[in-house]
Image: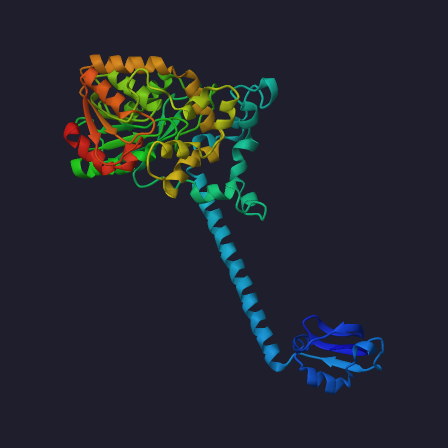
Length: 469
């Protein structure tokens, strides 16, 4: 019940340390549970202090001064000591785990810097644009904001990434995912004079099997825009394992792990430049002739035209879900790269590639694949700006018309192998084009969509294996 206390008290061995002060308590309501919280029962408290319970009418009366000694019971003290020890052990363990993680991240960073893209390896002075890095003196789209040492090296600032402010940001994300798409089949190659200023162009490619210039032509896989060689790995492995054929797939400039040149300054994303890069790549690796496999928009369409125009370098062509019929509509996601103002924003969207590729299929993309597609766009703005330059120079209707005519007139054997659940390209249109041009058409079994080689690599292999033999 209600009572009042007035007096001097010494609190010893409390959680707050040794405390000695005067305590004055007036008109409080103290229940049995509250008293027990101090390790004492109501009876022992009353007996030890001489407290008198007061009635409601006596609440204003004051008890005489008293001495109050409070301390934990042995059981409570032991329980609290054990809890404190467990808590401190947990804190120490978490600190050690965090330190080990940071040490591993720093070690990974040093290794990854050894294989970073060529534009990240340039000397400090090479990163500076001769005409200036800002204002109207800068050259290239958004060159004033990107082509400077600060912007190009910011994400590699290990001290910032490992700081408390850096934890969990894009930089730390990049440390975790950078370079994870490279494997034992990955290679790097310098294309002599591949850039506008005559410097070498660093190209990344995957190679299954050995190259024999005098042997059977290897298969060359060419990807589309927002894609790269990552999508062909499983199909290449099956063909190499089952058919004993050498398979090659490279990343076009600005894609995947190849160099990311600056548009307008380092590389020209025109049809002629893309085709020349393809030819020069084959010359550099020592391949005189290939069986060409294409899939996707823009880059794959250029590669298909190149194959139709160079029968001496291509013995057969396999077309996997690539626009071939005049009148086909360009998906709005890709049209946005051609819209003024809008293209500057979509170029910076790091998740646009995975969303576009996943949108053409009935299946969800797994995290490992999604990381590979967003990685280049998180590393730099150059891949996105390269697509803007590529799309701005691409003549959609003209390329479709020339492709159709090339298929009709070419003597190079060609097969159209189509994923019938494509959300972007009509299977009916593909079959109609194949029939009109005398090209073999085969439907890929299963619910395969736009990225047919990712959805059903086994079915694609079964569909084309007789043709490529």
